[in-house]
Image (cartoon, rainbow, N blue to C red; front, side, top):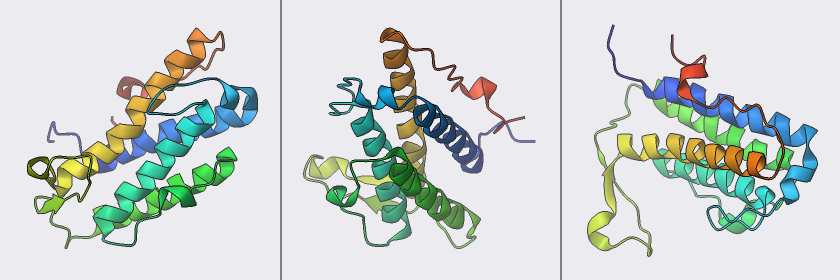
Length: 165
């Protein structure tokens, strides 16, 4: 057995965290209005929109399909945002299941916010970034929610995930 963590395992971990937060925010909708300040989001609702909207755009970029414009991501509700996550998961799963995918191939991100010499990555690195992006923000959200006096019971550490044996 390899000691490497596979992208499929990270995908499961990502989906676990997203599913937790969808359910938790659904049960505690007042949390959505908490002031946030993470990732340029004014509220938790904005942060969730950012997480799942960005996740879909990364999946679309890797798949070479038209990218969903930021303004097409609805401001709410959480169920609408979660649909973007589910769509991204479907794209990622399809890409990972395809033996034709070359994960070592270069991917150039045409983004004005990146200097031209920092825009090319391997497709593997872009996928890893896309899967860790949400995890980082969910951890930030767990801290924000606790600091605001709300318990979340979020156990987002990989140690507690069913993704790895």
